Length: 223
Image 1 (cartoon, rainbow, N blue to C red):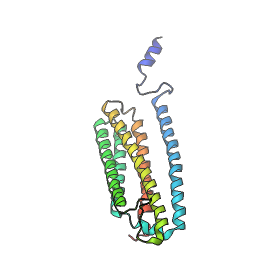
Image 2 (cartoon, helix red, strand yellow):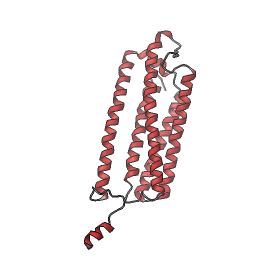
Image 3 (tube, rainbow, N blue to C red):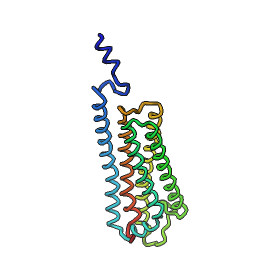
C-alpha cells in the first residue's frame, strides 16, 4: 500500500494513465502527428497531381493566368511564413528549456505572422473578385481563347490556397491553445511535447506554401 501511494505521488500530472512515462507518451504523440501529416501529404499530393496534369494540357493558359497573380504579395507571404517557422522553432526550443516567458512571446509572434499571412491572402482574394477571376458565371479573362482553361487554373488556385488558409486557421487555433497551456503552467520543461507536436504541424503548413508559391506565382516568369 505505501508503495502504491508513493507511485501515485510521483505520477506526473500530464502523464496519461495508459503510458508508463512521459517519454513513452511523447514518442506515441509524435508518431501520431507524423502519421497524420503523411495523410495530409497524400491529400495535397492529389491536388498537386491535378495541377500538374492540367498544366501539361494547357500550358499557355496556365502561364497567362499565373501572370495575373500578384507576385509581390505572394513573395511577401512566403517571407512571412519562413519567419513564422523560425519563431515556432524558437518556441519549441524555449519549451524544451522550460522558459515560459519566451514560449509565450514566440507563440504570440508566430500567431501575429500567421494572421498577417491571412490578411495578405484576403487582399489577394478581394483583387480576384474585383477583376472577375473567380470561377463561375461572372468569370472573365482578357484572352477569350484562354477563357475556359484559365478558369481551371483559378479553380485550382482557390482550392489549393483556400485549403492551405484553412490549415493555417487550424494552426492558429493550436497556437492559441498552446499559449493558454503555457500560461496556466501545463507546459513545462518535462512536458513540452504539445509545443513540439504543434510545431510539426505549423512547419508542415509552411512547407506546403513553399511548394504552392512557385507553382502558382512563378510559372513562366524570368526572375
